[in-house]
Length: 175
Image (cartoon, rainbow, N blue to C red; front, side):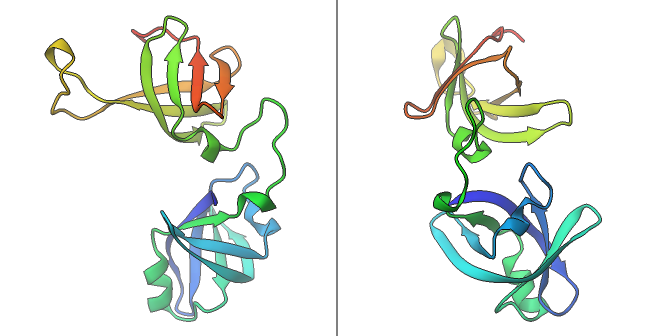
């Protein structure tokens, strides 16, 4: 499954859902007649009855979700489509979901941690890295994991190796 959005709230009393898409085109989910709802390994396929853009979200009516209680039960679930239904990305283009989990190191072999999120800023995409906080002499600290934001641009991202789940970046460890 490739996650392409999430349900943020019910919309009205007839089972409609508010959806925040994670697609390049805001209405990119409209290309698919069925959506998969769930999280982790728990997914179910639902037919899209109607969908439209409404302000800064999508609103959708899915078959089988017919009242506000059923819609409320979907809040927080992710929307995905099977990988087989997606077109192959162009050269040097990646689905955000493929980047999640990659281990990132810079040219000096400093380990920045793993990618935990990707988001768009308007100017460029940004990858969110999370590294375990360390205490004295490399011991794992009891503090919050360290987070680092890097622009996902060609000058910074030198190599993406999906099979080995790694990324090489040109970024100063002190920045």
